[in-house]
Length: 141
Image 1 (tube, rainbow, N blue to C red):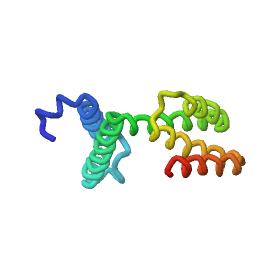
Image 2: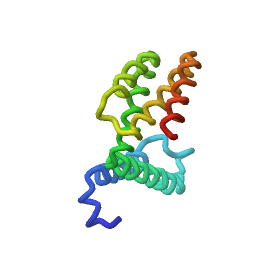
Image 3: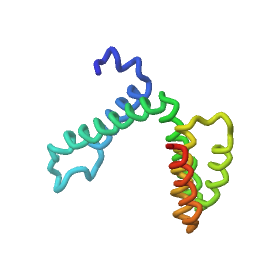
Image 4: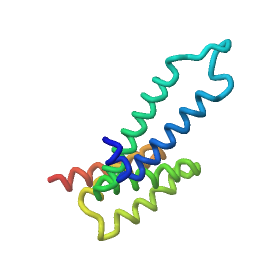
């Protein structure tokens, strides 16, 4: 990636600006040294970490640009929000409604069934989890 292409990628540009700002804050922060000595490895470690974050951000952008990948991210996001609320089981009817919608593709239905399998299994409903796997296998025939 060059500086010319960087400006055409707003998410990447934002991440680079944040990385530079964090690096500056880290270097200027009191207590970032031991016994007053500057750790020469800290900037390199930070830069390596920021490169990994930039790479992850690029992968998310690429995934979000593909409808099936975006659906996967949305399905995982729905389940995650319910889990953060402490209401994992409430994600099941939400995903079930999406599964029943006629607009879903075969791939999205399969993704929904895999997530439902996980949720059923994690909430002690192993028979329903097995039923979702049966549906997936029946679709594969």
